[in-house]
Amino acid sequence: MPHTNKIRNPRPLIGVSGELKDFNGFDVQSAGHKYVYSVVEAFGGMPVILPSFSQIAGDDLYSINELIERLDGIILTGGRANIEPQHYGGAPFRPETYRDPVRDSTTLPMVKAAIQQAVPLLGICRGIQEINVALGGTLYPYLWEVEGKHDHRMPRTDIMEERFALRHTVKLTPGGYFANIANKAGINGKSIMVNSLHGQAVDKLAKGLVIEALSDDGVIEGISMPSAKNFLVGVQWHAEFRLLGHTFNRELYAEFGASAKARAKNRNNI
Image (tube, rainbow, N blue to C red; front, side, top):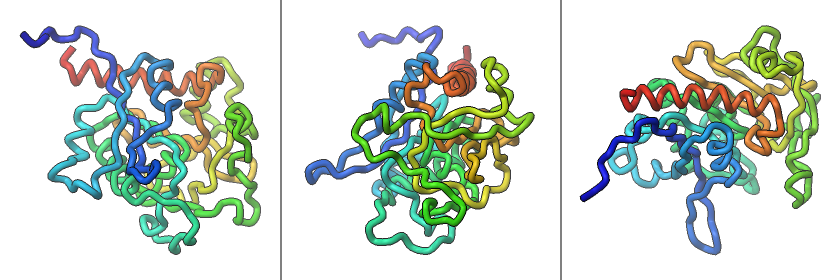
């Protein structure tokens, strides 16, 4: 007979956004290990990879709303591909710019669905950009070419520790959510050190979002949505990398995890 005993304290089910990649001529759905593992090590969640699929299958075969309903939290990951400018009224990409239109067609509607269904949402790197674009904001497609902005792209090295090393400070908005997280963690609530591996960045901030962190050249590095019914945060840095060794990132994940656990209990009528 099948096992039917109900789990008393189910761990929160966390969707980790994936992307469609070519691997030796085969289309592969993938998500970076560090994102998946961060869910486990930070708060004991159960990660599942969410395929970029909606443009291919259509709503009849892949309903984003139905998928979101079954989740207790979502991490929108970083990735090599950039969001196509057509989604925010920008000029077309240069031919050499890497893109993933299938992911665009999946994650952008996913942001709105998560907000509507009050599912905790954490956007990392590309993820913060997806949140902003989905809600009507715009991006700098080639940030390093913007006058007055630094080059925030990743270091040219294959050594992981060097690639994700802390590179610059971000100033936290006084009295904001991030500042409160920092104070709760017992660290300076004015600024933190972060890594930097992005070529795009938030330009015009979408309505309803607020700035939580800025780099010294004025790039928006952290956002939240005070009107959201549950946790909704985006960070431009890679908070998932070695998160237990970074006090702020550890506390940020703890906040996300607490919201996901609360939803899991409510969803399972515990």
